[in-house]
Image 1 (cartoon, rainbow, N blue to C red):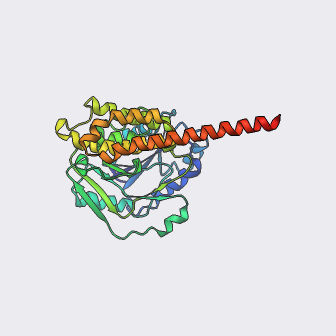
Image 2: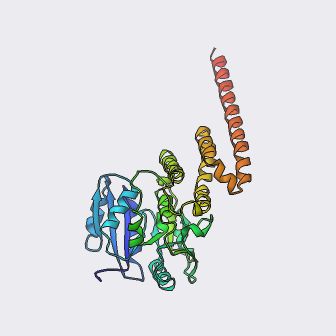
Image 3: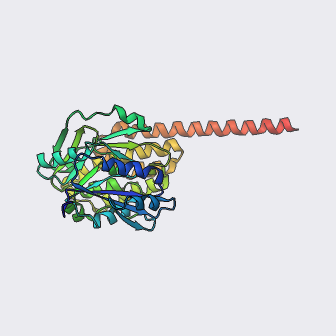
Length: 322
């Protein structure tokens, strides 16, 4: 292996011994061989290290106490030797052509700082048999903030970042929250050279019950962290790029507000709604601003009706018992 591979593949893992093997094997299966693999065990207790010891000749392994995915990725990055950092979560998979696509994009677009891969969402491995290569298509932007408010990436497994650019912005936040990926992209926002891969799919995103996206408290903590950072002027670009930042940031926040209402966390939803109200006004998100009060009212009425129905049922059971 060359002293400086093109890619350092960084895989953080915590108690996913049953999935980690498939993830690592999908990296071993790459047509492009110019890479090293770094796996960071974030304090697993399920036998993850037993598996990693079986592949230690081919994988660089590091351990830390359980501190979260952001801290684990940063530990891997500190030990990386590659020119690019390619992040892959331990429940996701790569296709055999993934690194070849990234390599070709790097060459064609003159060493961009940030490449966003394309996901294929799956629940069962049989779903992946239908995924085909079909050639490479990509969009280039001056920087990430210039890419608008479309969904350009899907989690950290989307990220391939030039190591010097990643280091320049300080890597992932080590605050243990969900949304550390959104925070990183905004801090990378004005670094020149962002490319989004349109085709083919470069990673398989696994939907399952253990997904960290189902951790509501950490999701809310991460969302509020982003709001506070923007209000405090901590993201790059200054006033000149504020509209672009807030267009991207509110794209992530709006689904969280809707999700809070659907889960019955109406107070949390209202706090976020009002904290970002002015941003959405200036962005012309009138439909969203009008829909949220209606959605919250409907949720309240459904909850009220359910409470009355439950109380009525309890009264009938008491009456029947006597």
